[in-house]
Amino acid sequence: MQDFYSHSNWIELGMREPNRDLAMGRRLGSTANKDTRTCKSCNGSDEDCIRNNLIVDQYLTTGYFSYTYPIQTPPGKCHHGYTCDFPGENSEYCEGISKDSMYSPHRHLHYTAASVAYSATTKVLNELRASTNTYTFGKFLGLTNSFSLVFVIDVSNRLQPLVGMIRTVTSQLVDSVQNISNKPSNYILSPFNGSHWGPIRVVTKINEFFDLIESLNETKLQ
Image 1 (cartoon, rainbow, N blue to C red):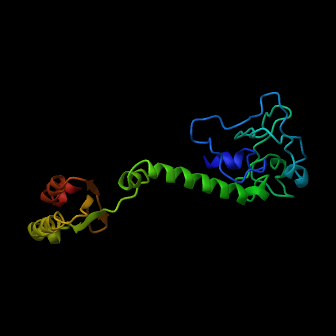
Image 2 (image 1 turned 120 degrees about the horizontal axis):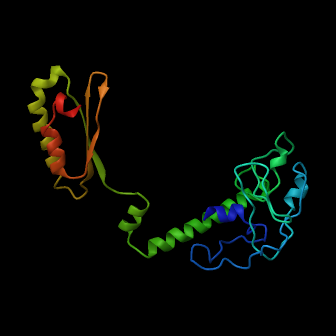
């Protein structure tokens, strides 16, 4: 969605608000057809020409992009443009309408495009949040108010006599958090032996974690 504002000419058309049809499954507006000339050709080192290379003022368009140079752009159509310097050794990459960064052809509109893209993203996320509940929205964003319960346990030979006690204490700690409202979302066990770590085990069910604790010895965990 953000690319729409940095790759199209929405900003150059004077728009300073998000496109209300974007991300709604609707037509974005009047677009230039394949026969409409959208950009004039410029010398890559002519910054003034490139700043004003668009020749359409009522149709949406975008630039042709390729990972290889030169780009086979149809006559009269816009380039996307690459990272470039004015002037510089790579000035031939400057022709285009991209506003991705302060090294893009239309760098003078980078912050404007970024601001409108930010507003558009905020609008969509707020609408999505309003259509569901906070918990589901948080899961969509990968957010959670729960935590992980992590145990890093030395399983070297010198602690083998204490493995039984370690099992007991660890199990008691796990049991102690089962009655709180904000339970752990997962349980992590990371054994180590001198300079050797792992394997790290991550489980989400308490009985699976107890099984790991019961197998807590150097042979089975490594």
